[in-house]
Length: 398
Image (cartoon, rainbow, N blue to C red; front, side, top):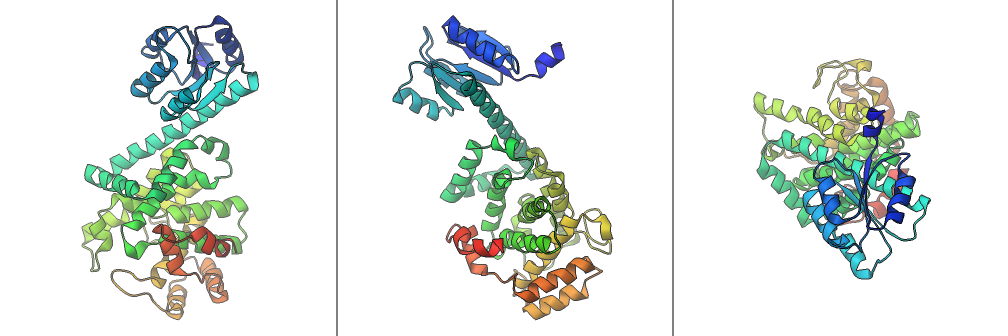
């Protein structure tokens, strides 16, 4: 009984009036552990000794006002979500509530549907933000270099588009819980911001993730994977190089050959990428595709030396699409290769580097013209200059 109670999310109801306090307790108690406080000081005593997930807060209370308590909550307990439920709301208090990042703002009299929905949204938002915190902690452990973290954050700060993406993800982080089954676009939005930030550091990589996602999606569709499998392939393809955030930029940009130790470091990016996505709770198949997108059909790839059908299908698809894009675009060490040369290389390494059956299907896609894409349009979109969704969206859906 005690374990079941502790497993429930904890909601602290703060209201100086007994009637609303008891009403909220009765509404929430079936699914939540409910604590009650009659004023702000009493609420702070509870918060400082008890783990609380949500605070339901009235604004007009004797002593410490609700707005003061909101400010204290944000300073001392930033992980706690706040739902304001008040009969004395004004434009000024609503503005303050937004500034303090509250989850919801309800007017009295309230009803059961409003309250339960508001608390549910707050809990989902909290879960999403905890996932983001876990991701950032994993990112820090991978980088181990504060200078690089600061450089990444500075890049986000300089770009209004990236700032907007981060803000949108934080505002709607809880929606991941509802969308987890379908892996909606927002599921990976925060990771997309980081993937695009990585690309923005190197002109040779601009648009790479979107192109690989496009080619991978086309191949997944051609071999008749389910809609969900196709979506997982596209997401894995977009995020396949995420782990390069843990690799020194000078190694990624170097035009000449790498030393064995340097190459080994670069090859860690697939493992790092898979580890980074784990805290966000996205589908296991996406993480394994990221980890294994450099495995070779003959078993000579990395990181685990898988061969043949041991390699996850999504990883084999991304590997092909990634190689095609690498050969058809400029790189620091060479110019883009002609399409006929690329086709011959894919044929030559079918059964060695690539799944031979998938290679045949992919070459048919290339021959059909389905893989033709305006590289500059995609690159400009990733750099925040053009409009990829408008200009290339129709091609991506075909």
